Amino acid sequence: MEIRFAGPDDMAQIKRLWEYCFDDPPEFVNWFFSRRYKDQNTLAVYEGGSIRCALQLLPYKIMLRDQPLKTSYLVGLSTWPQYRGRGNARALIRHALEIMRMRQEWVSILLPFRYDFYRKHGWEICYHHLMYRGGREMLGPAGKILEDIIPADKGQIHLMNMCYQKFMETYNGYVVRNEDDWDRLLDDLYIAGGTGYIAVKDSQAIGYVLFEISNRQCKVRELIYTSPEAQKALMRLIANHYSQIDSIVWNAPPDDISYMDMPDPRGMMYKQPYVMGRIVDVGQALRILKPLREVELNIQVIDPLLEWNNGVFSLRNAGGAMEVSSSDASPQAVIPVTTLAQLLWGYITPAQAKKQGKLDVNDQRAMDHLETIFTPAVNYIIEDY
Image (cartoon, rainbow, N blue to C red):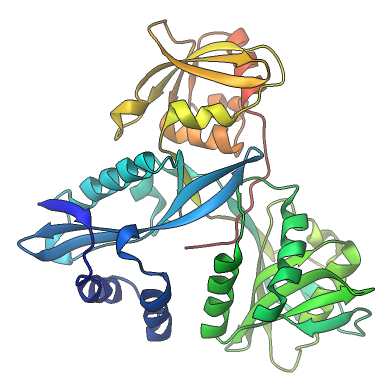
C-alpha cells in the first residue's frame, strides 16, 4: 500500500470512485472535477497502480478566536467496497493530517457522512444550525418590499461580501471568503438552479439571500443581513414566491430568534448538528487563545491517532498571549482531543464537558483556569465542502 498525492493521470479514477460512492448529480460532479479538483490537494491509497481510497483537502481560511487560520476542509473520503474494513481510510486520514501539519494548518474541519466514524479519528461536532422547516407562513405575510432589490450575481460579489463580513463579525469559526470562494459558491448555486437577491437602501447593500426552489420547496442557503429591516425585506421576498412554493427550509445561525416573530413556531425548528472540527497540532492551536486573567495549568491530551498531540501541555498566560509547552508535570486535567476541539471552538464550556464526563479535573482551581481559557462562542459556518 502506498499513500501519495494524485498524479496528473489519476483524476479519471478518482472521479469514478466519487461517482460510485456519492449520489451527487452529474452536473455537480463534472463542475467539481473541472473547477475544484487539484492534484496537490488530493491524496489516495494506491495498490499496484490502482486507487483503493481517496480524499480531498480543500484549502480555506477560518476566523477562530479572532485569529485567521489556514485550514483544510476534508471532503470526498471514498473507498471501493472491496477494500473497506482493511484500514485504508484510517491510514489515509492520518496521512492527510500529517500533510496539514506540514502546511501549518493547526485545525481541520469537515461535514461528515457519519459523526461516529470521524469521532473515532479525533473530530467532534463544533457547529450546528437552527433549522427552520415549515410553510410560507413562518416568514410572515407576503407584501410590499420597501427596499430596492437587485439580482445577486458574480458582478455583485463585492456587495455580498461586505454584508457577509459585517454579519459574521459576531460569530466564531466562519470562513473568511475570498473571490474564489464566492465564485465557487455561486457556481454551486447556479448548478442547483438557484438564484439570489441583494437588498439595497440609500445605494448601500444591507443584505442578500441565496436560495433554490425544487418540487415546490424553497431551500434558503444563505440569509445575510445588516439590520432587522433587511432581514424582514428578504424574508418577504421569499414569501412573495407563494405561487411556486409550499414549504421552506432554512439553516439559520444557532442564535437566531426569528421564531419569536412567527405566528406559531411550534414544530418548525430544531437544532441540526453540522460541521466537525479537529485539532491537528495541539501545541500550535492552543496558542491562538488569549486568556483574560493569569493562568497556569497542566493538561493531559489524549489523541487516538496523532502521537504528537499526546502528552502533558503546560498553559501559561504570557502578557495576554497563551504560552504552550510540553511538560513532565502531573496534569490537573485530562482532556480527549475531541473535547479539546469543542473547547477551543467554544462550542461547549468546561462545565458542560465535566458534567457530561468529557474531561477529568483534579480540583476547582483547575476548573477556574479552564473556564478562563476556554470561553464560550457562537460558531457559524455555511460552507459544506
